[in-house]
Image (cartoon, rainbow, N blue to C red):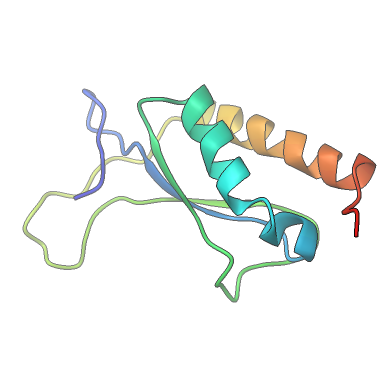
Length: 102
């Protein structure tokens, strides 16, 4: 079951980074930073998705499971989503200023 807050909002997210080696090699770093900044939330960073593009992160709230044994959770507030996206924007900036060294 996804993690929920007292208000019934989900606190679990799937994060899909932009495509590219820079992000592929930093998947753990991205998850660690998100969990450091948002300790009451859970983030799964995945590189396997048809949703990857070369410019932006996608954040998908996990609202429930297909087994139907638990009630669906509420969408997170826009404030929560904006804070998560602000954190992820920092990785976009880093990718543009800190290339991969071979």
